[in-house]
Image (cartoon, rainbow, N blue to C red; front, side, top):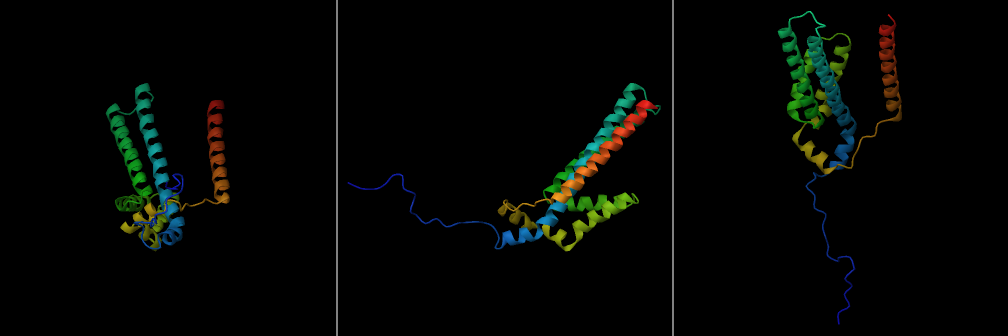
Length: 188
């Protein structure tokens, strides 16, 4: 009679096989902060896409309600253009969040155009261009970096509590300004 325990763990040696490049975790940890900053550009493009689509909808609502004195064909054309720009923003935002090289090129072109929006647009787009074209920015768009990201899903960027507090304050200020504007319109 055999005394094999059917509940015993397997005794076979199993080697850890990985397609990860050597030192993938070290590379990812070195670039994770810059990677997070570049991915945040995608979030900006998402917000821009939402705002642009709201403008498109507002144009159509203004035309339908008769609140606009402009030609309806012009309003429809502008609404379609804004809708297309909003869709492009979402598409580019998704690409930059996935660290796609085509998205880097597209964002570069859009940021160069955005430099004309003096002073805020110049500052924001200049910073975006810096993030994309500095040495770390070039590295995270290289083809082998995608394999490093895939091999190290456990490496995450932790946002500082100070950044979260500042973000909360910015949101509160924007909300206060919007509420003040709505209140001023309803009173006046």
